[in-house]
View 1: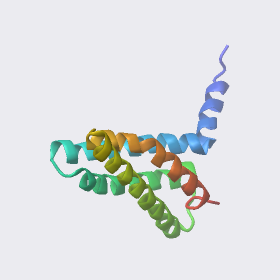
View 2: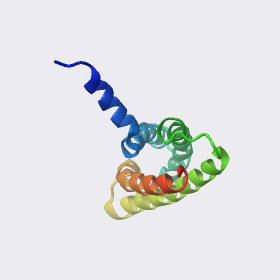
View 3: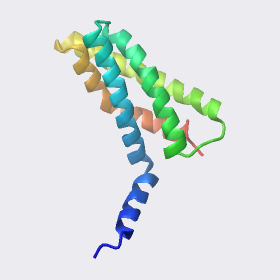
View 4: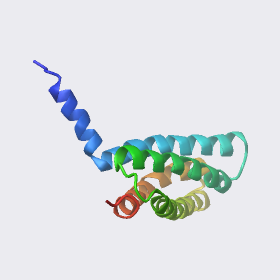
Length: 137
């Protein structure tokens, strides 16, 4: 018989798992990033790097806000946290741009494939740095 307690414990364990929450928030941020990238690159015809340069800051602002409020529950030093988060996003941007460039240049695949290929590496790189720097208690 399910008393409902298992459901509450399961939900609570997800909310307390910082990597999982970072992944869920990052998943939505990635959807924003990739969706905006595809809109700009595939539909509006901008260059892959211009689309990447616009989609990253929009998704990063969403990610920072959600991670600060819901995941790491940090309300102090918001400006310094945002600055360090932005620096890490810039490093992730550079890593992503490098991967996009490598994929487009050396595989013959398009920018969208390069963008998708960049996501896992950039995700773990940024989680590692943000959890230890931007959202450190």
